[in-house]
Length: 116
Image (cartoon, rainbow, N blue to C red):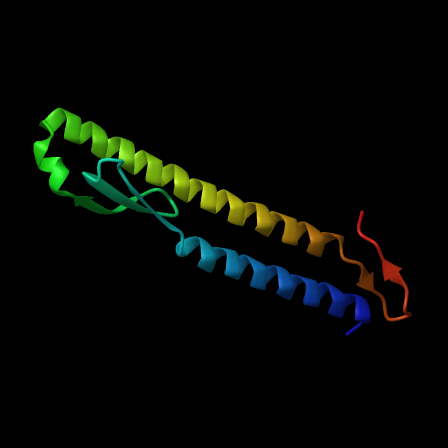
């Protein structure tokens, strides 16, 4: 196998590993937000899906419509936080993938190919 082929394979392996790391890290993203009055806490995963909902003692003093609104607002706040975390992770992933794409490839004669 030529050095160029080895360089391409080595880059592909690094890219694969980076994609696997991104996938695994994105699965661990969660966000939990509690309303100011501590009546509602909502937890979401990295995709913004509700994974937990807790009602504190102040929730019993709210009328049903107010409680429903507070639940939705709290869940939305948690989803926004999870999205921020995911976007940060995606930005880092994109930067690292671009670095890999720009890394030079070595030929067997010792010359280097610089990607455009």
